[in-house]
Length: 285
Image (cartoon, rainbow, N blue to C red; front, side):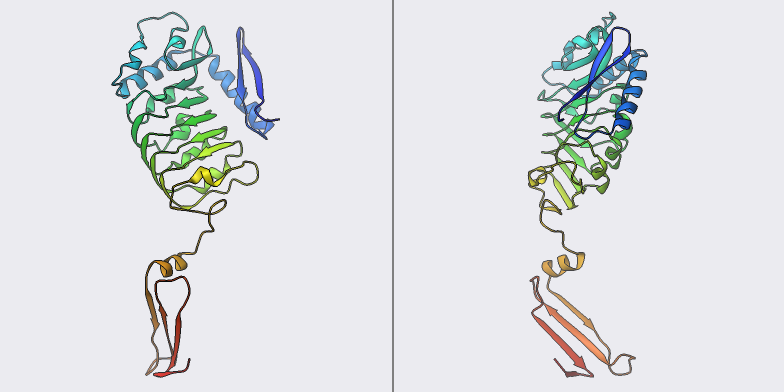
């Protein structure tokens, strides 16, 4: 079944649903439920600290986050904040954060690590910039849906994203990411929505296998990408031959151990136009 959910009861009066992708591993699902159950059962001060850090670290020209008033200390008060969804309406434990299209500026909020049972994060359509933290996998260990699209994030896609093993949705399109997409992302077997379109990426795309349907549209407008479902990747040598006129000479002959010398004349084209073979100065072919 696709799009199914598992309802979990961990503590009295707290019931929530954890969405899982297609072909989820039962062992991993139980592990996620156990870990989230432990987190949700204890305290909420870290969640308040998480949201305070987000507000402090981001520029908010339109004042959308001014409604985040931390002077209220009643149970569940942060659940009424703009863009915040809690595990329970009466408990200050953040489930999802959706702050899309607010014109926010700054870098990826490191304080998200204090929202320790966050499963959904949407910061799309803002003006956030800079690299993603290398340890994003530690910051968002239980993340199921991550949407950072339509910002100005740059640098490489962090290797630690491959540690976010519960990811169903990963949207990084319309940014300025560069370099290669690490093959380790192909280990995300729950992934069913993935896009890195409109970036500056290059190299071979990950092999996601048959468990997810990643199409060419997921990689659109990254001229340097190759590999299924895109064009076949060419070897380094072939790329060099296509991009430059290359003359390779292996000179031998008088006084050398090997009597043959070879000269390949390769104009700017993928195929070899001329091949000359010399023996002690005489052209043989």
